[in-house]
Length: 141
Image 1 (spheres, rainbow, N blue to C red):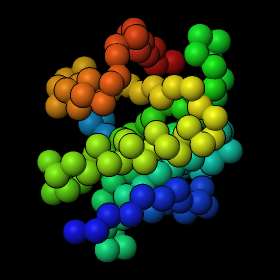
Image 2 (cartoon, rainbow, N blue to C red; image 1 turned 135 degrees about the horizontal axis):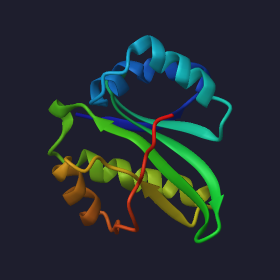
Image 3 (spheres, rainbow, N blue to C red; image 1 turned 90 degrees about the horizontal axis):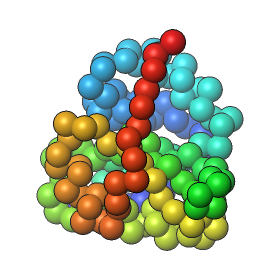
């Protein structure tokens, strides 16, 4: 199978909502996801996708910022590849493509969060050279 990696326009973010919905454990409604993605369009956000024969099979959001401890950085968000496309090196190819893309944009680092219970992702990210920097805390208001 042939895969293509690309950045989609923020105007086309509605296309990724079904994949992000499948990823989220909290089952935030697709209506709320659409509202939130509409807000994200104007917040230093870009979206990379994986296409297989014009079908969307993978996605990750990218938040660009400058951090005091590392410089220009990108934080990956909602990284997801459909289960039937996993286990064939696609994730590794996607990460390599993302790394090249963000280096071209001047980034010094890539950061991400992953759910504590998602052990397969931890192994994958360790194998990709990521290190644990700290804990991500969340307080709902």
